[in-house]
Image (tube, rainbow, N blue to C red; front, top):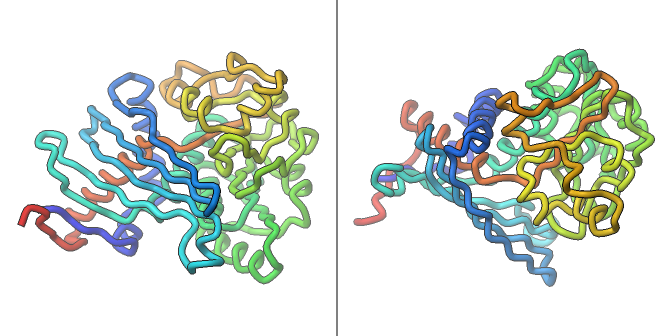
Length: 330
């Protein structure tokens, strides 16, 4: 029998604090080579603005096995009243291969993306960081704000997006309710970056929305919005200025336009990347080397994040009697 878990089921059991812990462990496994994660299969349909991916992973130490199908269609909200990101995840029994759960992956995708930024923040941001900043106001941006609050000791969160004033205020109010922190609307992206110790970029921008001279000394940046070739949120000078840690260098070489474009222009080299997040988690690579250093975590998203969180959701759902049982073989 398998459990069918809809979005509300997932929301009942998946918290950011638990997600950060399981994602941190998953990256440790990846660095220790006890995880298998083939490169994800990606297709892009420019005609409809669609990004389609299939992502398997097996975390052997934790026994988490499964795959995610995920799509990002930018016009979904305006044209079809659907989320921009839609995902479905299968969790399998690692001893039999049987599918033991099928669950909505949209909310989980946002949480696991926030969680990996939480892991990076935990290991790369200064411990005395007081102000967090979030560029963007979508589903991903909401979870980035929660992750910053969970993984650091910030007292204030600044927000900025290009949405209308009412939407911006609703977003700030939601973040304040969820985090219990002081949340303020910045007047511009520049103001947000200049005042923030930790910044998350979670937009759909195709061209740079920040400038290298905006960053405070010692700031930490989580860049998660751009995850396809040819598009980027960060300017080349920011890439040149910062100490960069990737979720996985090989994945970023294929999909991270933020890094690909400066490399292709001859303004940066892949060898300049300081390492992978798993090596930072395991203590083999420092997340930062000084209090004044500006650090950057670049993420394109990895299947180990999805499957570690999905396995957690399955365990919690079983323990709490959540979900609908279904027999695929009947």
